[in-house]
Amino acid sequence: MRRDLAIAAALVVATLAVYAQTLRFDFITLRPTASDSGAALAHCSFDDDKYVTRNPWVQAGIGADGVRAAFGEAAPFNWSPLVVLSLMLDATLFGVDPAAFHAVNAVLHALDAVLVYVLLRLLTGAIWPSAIAAALFALHPLRVESVAWVSGRKDVLSAAFGFSALIAYVRFAARGSRRAYAGALVLTVAALLSKATWVSLPGLFLLLDYWPLRRTSRGLGRLLAEKIPFFAAAAALTLVTAAYQEGNRITLEQIPFADRLVHAFAACAWYLAKTLWPVGLAPHYPHPYLATSGGAPWTGAQLALAALALAALTALAVRFARRGYPLVGWLWFVGTLLPVLGFAQYGTQGMADRYTHLPHVGLFAAAVFGGWELLVPRLGSPLARGSAVAAVAAALLALGSASFVQTRVWRDAETLFAHSLRVTPHNAVMRQGIARCYLGVGRVDDAQRMLEEVR
Image (cartoon, rainbow, N blue to C red; front, side, top):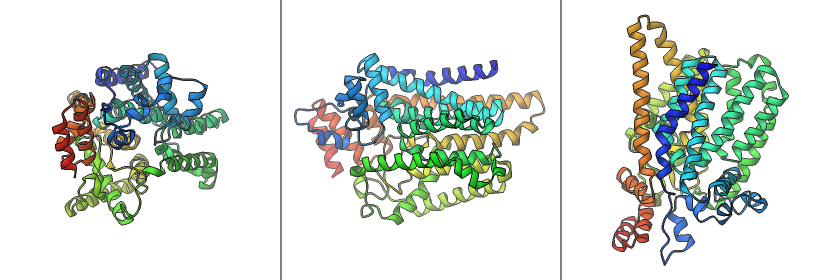
């Protein structure tokens, strides 16, 4: 127990060491100008205005009317009522101060890291592999967007509910407790009311039934039957969210299904590449098959490399399926990416760092447990064990340092958009965003130049 508490404390300290700097950051909002209209700002804003700075319901704080509005007019285009309620609570407790909103995000992410550790520890009983996987999740640079961006509250809040739902499900599976089952269901609904991408949660329960819970002897029919309320909740809330986002939907005329399929295939490999080499990160990556976004279609070479990588990893997962974690980790990664691969496309982004929030847990667990099984029996000498510990510590330090540096680009809108243009130079959305920033400070010529390049 003491060791578990020490690991949890270390995860919290390491996470906050990266993200404490966000308390000095602003909202990612655009300064209004004399000629501004709501439509003009909405076209190139980055959501903090919709969620907080131009949302009168959130600014008014928690109240009976606010609770009602959180499920309707107070929610921006992305229906996430519990996120809106959490932002209202921030405003009630601390006022509309960006430092407070950022602090809550950082604390939630630290909590998420601890929950990942608790989940893996309960599932496997393994202390150090669980701790390493949780640290990778907490410190990877692909987490920065979800934590340093106030609107990333969707990710960190939904993860707190979702990981808690998984923990409750593990307790139900171990004890058959009705209370744990009810808790898992309530927490699943809460995760979905925070972000609809947790629609994959019932599928994750089934994966855990295969490994490490080993419940398949009960029969697939029985396992599916006990998940019916979870699948029903996921389907119902996903339909509500989809209806709410209808105005932001990209049609098949804009991106044909064949292009969506190719993109989904390539995007899976892109996320793997960014996991291994997290450089050139941006808040918006133009969709490669949406003409107005400024993106370029995937090349033949990129698609060939994607095919090779995905085929190799799938073959490895199947080859070692009896060990459990390779297949479950890989299916977790791919399965939780499915809702965000663009088959139902909303918005102009092709990929997003935040979309790896849940997928990374399965991927990191498979990688760490695989590495542990492969290497630990070969670490016979104290020197070998010390070298392995040093290598893990160096990797985590490198990831944490990279995240610390990446977090800085989220200081304010102009810094963020300027960075984005450096790494995605043909990004129409970011050019429009920085043009609005220039107009807000009277740099009309610079704004005009940016807008002309968009055209």
